[in-house]
Structure formats: C-alpha cells, structure tokens
Image 1 (tube, rainbow, N blue to C red):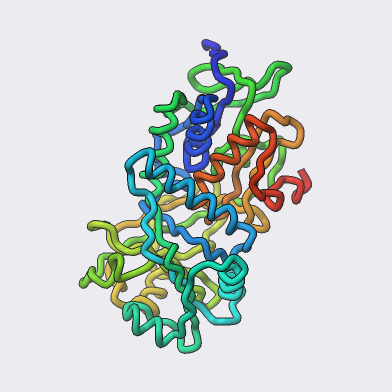
Image 2 (tube, one colour):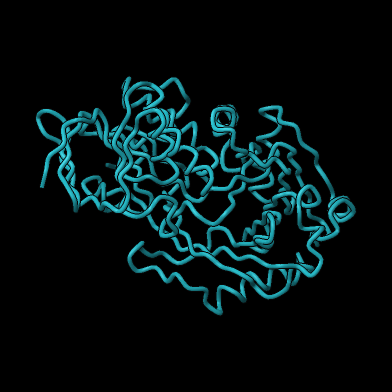
Length: 378
C-alpha cells in the first residue's frame, strides 16, 4: 500500500465533530486529512435524523453555557461564510414537575447566566400551545433562543468549507489501526498507509474500539427517532410549535416541529439498550413504537397517528454524561473527542475550534477542564 507523508494532522471520523475540526484546522492554514469509513452524512452512527434540538438553557450543567454562547457565535459565522441557514430558532420548551432535577437545573442555568426565558404554568402552556397536555402541576420554561439544527446540512457545510480551505476528505475508507511513532503518527486503512504529525480521534460510537488502549468507560446506546404526520399539520409547524423536552414519569421525551413534509419528530431520550455499531438492531420494533405512542396518546394526542418514518441512531455515553475533550494521556500529539452522550451536536462548531486549539497549540482558552480524561482512571 502507498504511504502519504503530506498531512500535518489526520482526523479519524468525518461526522459532527470531525467535519467541524477539519474546517477549523483548514481555516488556520493547517488543512488535515479526514478519513471516514462510510459516505459523508451516513446513517450508521450518531449524526443523522434530520433534526437536533439546540438550546442554551442547559439542565445538564450550567458550565456548558459559556461553550454554548461560543457555539452560537460559531454557527452564525458558519452561516455567513456558507450562505446556508443552519440555526432554526423556533424556541425550546422544557416541561416537567418543578421538583424534577432537570427542571431545577434548567432554571438554575437561565438564572445563573441571565438567559432570556419565560416560566409558565401548565395552564399557560396549554393556552399558548394547545397541542401539549402537560400534567396539572407541571411547569414550563420557554427559551426563545432554542430551536433545532439539521445535522446532515451542518456536517456537509463544515465539510464543504473545510475542503474549500484545503482539507482532504476520504470517504468509504476504513481505518484498520493507528500507532504513534518516533516522528508522529502512522494510520493504516483499507486503502493506504498515512503518516502525520498529529491525530484527532472523533470516531463517535466506534471510539471504544479506535481508542481501545485507553479502555474508556463508554457505553453505546440504541436510540429510536420517530416521525408522525398529524391530520392537521399547522399546529406542529414553526412558529406555532417550539422544540420541546418533556420530563414525565421517570422518562424524557423530546420533539421537533415539522419541516416541509417530514412529519413531527417525537422520541424518547436516554432509554435504549446498550449495543455496538456492528450489532445494533436498526429496525423499529413493536416495543419501540408502543413506548413512544404511549407518550403521544397522553401528552401529544393530535400527533397520535401512524408513524411515517423511523431512524435508529447511537448515543456514546460517559458515566457522568459529560463529554470527553482532551489530549491522549500518553501521546500529546493525539487528541480525543467523544462520549457526547446524546447532547453534543449543538456544540459542534466550538468543539471543532477547541480540537484545532489542542492540536495546534496544545491548549485552549475555552473552559473545558470538567471534560478532561483525568476524571476517569485511564
């Protein structure tokens, strides 16, 4: 196999974070080689499904909010450079009991960071958005700066601009192994062998295998996304319907308003079985359907109609649900980003910028200490 020695950095994975990192490296006059085992915007990993919720009112941890401010700035910059609309800020509504840990977390987040928001009663939710059946004592926190992004469009935009700035993206080329050498990094694929000075691992649900030397505490979780076509679509389209997250009966469900004729998206969050990218069941099962239909029947009855489409995606979860963004503890020229635990997509442009920082400078000014590998025993 031929050996190529023309790359300062190689990125393994051209999904959400890999494409963003390629863009930021290329913009900084250090265009990388990106190796993707499938086609761009494929449906085997985590970065597909036509929509992802975006929000700043962050119940997961208020420490993410400064990163979200930066991410929004980066999304806007990407829109300006590409001429492509990426942010669909139709609002985001969090619903649940006032004593629920996530509702308390989202209220703390907006107050600590002075985010625009409205706190609503269940009756006020019903009056403004009649499609929602909140429980009597639920509250709603509405964030006007929330909404959704379209993952396939975002990834392709990052990739196209990365290529424009000089990056090289190889699709349908599987990585067999990588190793650190005295002069840099060696990467062997099904097609060739490449050498570089630096390496970035953004392999999504394949990260446990591609970084097997670290024995990372990652679990890959099967997630089901479903779409319904209401008989009366108007209330389910923006601006009539915001994106929403509903914490109910020990579960969390989310929804995203209709785009064109795609239907309204409703899905259960963080409740799938543990699997691998190779063994996951990629078909909708009766249990999948009955679960989401039990939710729509009670809380979103106008959407309790036949499912028109379903997609299976994969969450790569850490034990604390926080991301991993760090340099390899044994190899300072290897950078890792993964474990985005089902809430990472909205951060893509700022994560890409941080990965470029760590790769080119060995450090970043962004507040990511809580995302380091040293919180695990690796």
